[in-house]
Image (cartoon, rainbow, N blue to C red):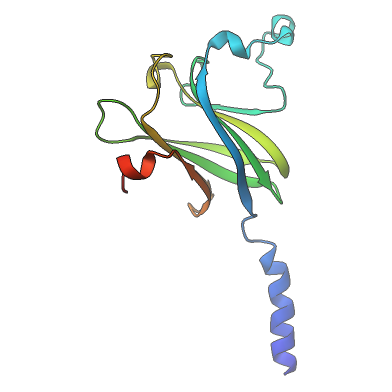
Length: 155
């Protein structure tokens, strides 16, 4: 009996080592111009000011593109990878991008952008998309998809 009690007590600290819970509170999509990222501080410092948000781009030097504004809520800081699959008009297979990030504890906004050559036409819209948040081992922590994802891409 005492062995079982000791075993259960040993599991309590191990539970804290598991990946934290991640919730996708909201996902908004839309095109953004390069100018929409400029802030007054950039004129003085020469560096982009993300304003407390994390900005992930498929082409880091290009700002214009199609973005997913992802609001997450986590109970602990989490090393993660955001995987974005997008179907475009005229493409039978989705393009898939994975971007590494760190999700801070609490509520946080991450902008995930297909930029540069990955999204050259700001007037274009995706047909369907799926966004997954994965932990360092590739385990899915959260997912969100557009309405058309299931009917357009049953995988």
